[in-house]
Length: 214
Image 1 (cartoon, rainbow, N blue to C red):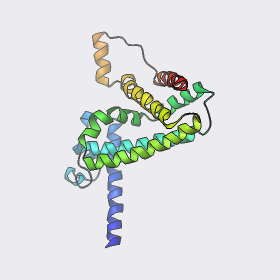
Image 2 (cartoon, rainbow, N blue to C red; image 1 turned 180 degrees about the horizontal axis):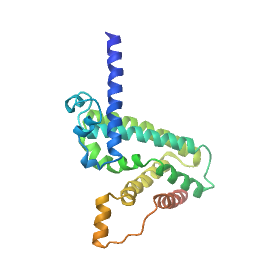
Image 3 (cartoon, one colour; image 1 turned 60 degrees about the vertical axis):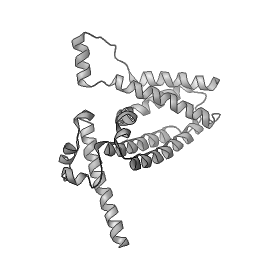
Image 4 (cartoon, rainbow, N blue to C red; image 1 turned 45 degrees about the vertical axis):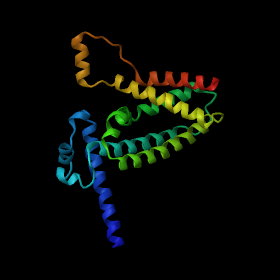
């Protein structure tokens, strides 16, 4: 019986990975509101009914994808920052911004995480996600401790809060959907292009200098 349970759990994980991969493929090519379980099922060998054996909503799938993307971003930052950069704030800020830019799927997901995705999943799945989120942020805290040895936990948390709120608001603005671009063109609303990396680097540098004076 134990072997059967292990085998079934392994099969479940394989199925969930297949579902996530199908959801990612759609997420990278379509708007979120255009994606439904029928489309996700079509990208797999499952029927829509079979999907419900593994997930309860499309948001639950993207919650799992968001966790994968978060862990990938943290892993990137751990590899990027392995030394004290407290005397080179501009270099840190530029590298931080470039690392964020390397993970557009994560940025897109995080921008809708609190307003859409988390509000349409079961409490059980959201609790699981939050536990893993805490682990990832703790790892990121260790990275920041190496970069800015003088910062305490409160300062590191303040940095996370400020930069994440800024990025969550900035990314959708710098990557409008086709309908938004067309609407601006038709309305004669001219907006100078905003360079995501430049703006994030500028904000991060400002934030670090502010926190160093606090």
